[in-house]
Amino acid sequence: MIKWLFLFAIVYLLYKSAKPFLTVFRFSNTIKQKKRKQDLRNKIYKMDIQDAEYEENIDK
Image (cartoon, rainbow, N blue to C red):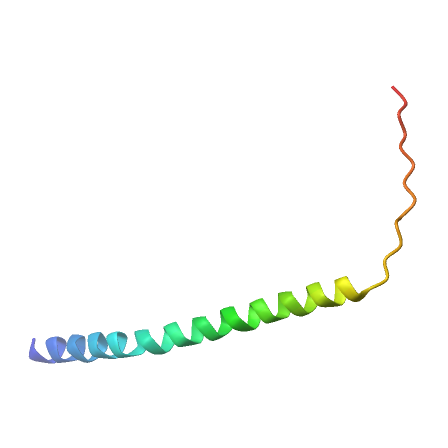
């Protein structure tokens, strides 16, 4: 019984100590994702995109 309590205490402490590291990891992933999106927006903005020809088909 004492072994189980000791094991539970160790797992609980590991979980509590790992939470801040996971938060930092998620935060860095969010920053990377925003940077990738911004890079893509910049590439699209710099492209010389011509207006496409669009023919509307209004047959009823």
